[in-house]
Image 1 (cartoon, rainbow, N blue to C red):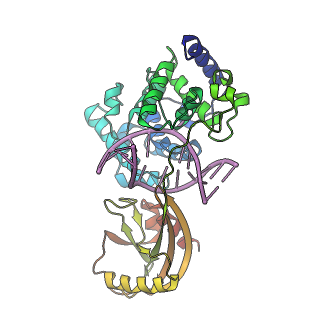
Image 2: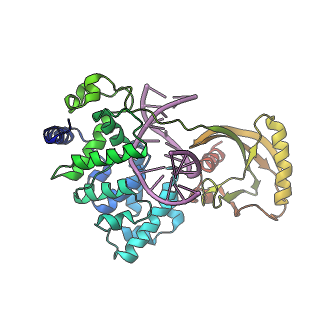
Image 3: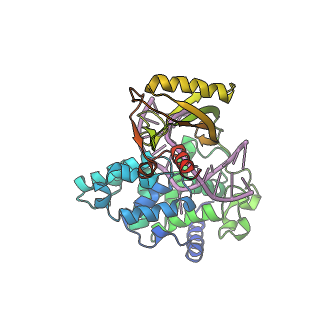
Length: 360
DNA sequence: AATACGGGGGC
DNA sequence: GCCCCAGTATT
C-alpha cells in the first residue's frame, strides 16, 4: 500500500503544493540554524499566529547566539512574557551559553549535539537541521501525527508508544532525497492548513487520492482521540497592596507555577464561601504575614485561567492606606512602582492586574 | 505511561 | 466550553 510508487507520488504532490501555497513567515526569510531554532522553540505547543510577533521582537533584540548568551535571564523572560511554558525561555538561554562555551558560538550541525541541548528533543533537532541545513531527518509533531494517522488509516490512539514508533518510522520512510527541509515544512503546512482536526479540507487536498481515510470518509473518526485529561477548579485571590505609589509584588518560587516570574500575592480560597468573608480572612492573614495595616476593597475584577490540569478563578482586591514595615513574607518580595513592574517579567495574572491598575 | 508546564485561537 | 496547538523533561 505504501510502496515506492505511493511514496514518490506523495512526495511530488506535496512539494508541488507547498511551492504554491506556503505562508510567508518571518523565520522563512533567512533560514539560519539560530533563527529556525528560536522559531521552533517558540512554536512548541504554540500556534503560528501567536508566535510571529514574539519571534520578531526576540530576534531583533537577540540577533545572534552570542547576544542571547550574554543577556540577563530576566530580559529573556520579559521577551517571553505571555507566551507560556517559560521553561522554554530559560532552557533557550542556557543552551545559548552552552553553544558559546562548547561550540565556539556556532550552532552545532550534528544531530547528537543538537539533541543534547536543553529544550531540544527529537522533533526540534530534526526540524532545525532539516529546515536550516537540509539534513535528511524526520519530524513528528501535532500536525504530522494527525496527517500520518489519516494517511495510514490508523485505527487506534496515535499517541501510544507503539503508534508513535510506527509514525516516526513512517515519517522517516517518506523523506525525499532532496529538499528535506521543505518537505518537512510541507508536511506541517498541509497538516495545519488542509488536514486540520475538524472538517479537514479533503476536497482541495493535493494528496486526497492517496489517503485511505479521505477515500473512505473517515475524517471524523481518525485520528482516534486520546483519553481526556480531567480538570479541577481552584479559586484564588490576588491582593494589591499600595503604599505611597509602590505595590507589593512577589517572585514565584521553585516548584511553583510561574517559577521566577513576578506576581501579586495570591491565596487559595475555598470554593463555596462568600467572597466577602474571604476578603476579611485574607486581610487578617496578610496583616499577620506582613506586619502591615491592610485595608481591603473590591473585588477589582475576576478572571479565569486554564492551566493543563486545573482551572483558576482569580479574584483581586485592592488595598489602600497601608503603612508600617514589612517583617516577613513567604517568598521574595519587593515594593515596585507601576513603571518598574512594566520592566519585570510578570505572570499572566500579574500582567493583567498591572495593566488594570494603570488604566482603571 | 502519566504528568507538569501556559496561554490563546477557533468554533 | 471544548479541542488543540511546529513538545520536552521528569517521574
